[in-house]
Image: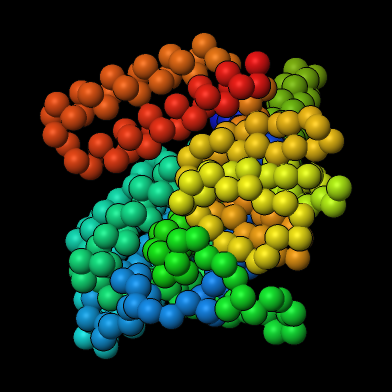
Length: 289
Length: 137
């Protein structure tokens, strides 16, 4: 049996771990609030944006480089993960989904390139040699211009013909308890369909300034921005939520271990006392002779 | 006077949602004004000054790129950023403008085309900020 000293040391250690995980849980909880607020603030913008896209792409006709549908030879996957770990299986799930998709593409004889947003994805895929570009340490601050840099690069790569299809993978924030790895097709941009039953002025009635084609030219890159920014916000919120749950579990596990160890400690202490008493009683008996 | 509903949304949330008399905005082909019951209209928005009047009181805002849609007596601006003129510090805006000018000059000297677009955009924003802040102070 472990000595008293050893067990009490271990209890101290586990208690300290619990303190850290508990603190991390609370930090994540407050960060989650911020991330969720950002997501909610972004919602009206994205919503209005999509409405306009829908009313515009219905009336617009013409070829846009970002809407060009080509025979897929190279597929690009944008993997959006968090920068930091200790958030349960959140990042692993996204990577698993990406791995599956890569295998699918490769089985069909297509080349795959990766763009990793967030440190974790970059670390995971580094050895595969498929990474075309990596953006790390940008998940902490949610800035629109970060999304712009990324989407501009992806658009350029697509227009140059180095990729014929772009998919984004990220952890979708369903609720604090549920974050699902999700894949969304980004390029070529598909015309947004108007929600059924929506009575809106027919898009042909609009006065466009400049022409609807030129507006689309401005809108499409912006649309990519919105998509990328949205995934980054989603991953930001999901990461904190996942970490919160993971740290809560860790704290619970710690308190379980502490109570187990305390039991062992008490038993050991009791055994030591019993042993000492036996010695004393034995000694007294011997003296009586 | 008939009024038109004005709504400005940015990625960091809705900024303005009011009924106003007239809106003037920096459109693709120059500044345009929108009154109540305007025909459906869609335009891209450049960096610049957006003003709206409401019972004789005028509010000036600085907006950066995006677009605007008019339909059903409602005008919606979907822009990347929007700042109220009264929130902008004139001195800071002036300093930012100087910095942007210097940066642009430096980049021009080096001939980096990629950075030039960005620097020009930054200067445009700084200029718009100066104009708007001077008007509202």
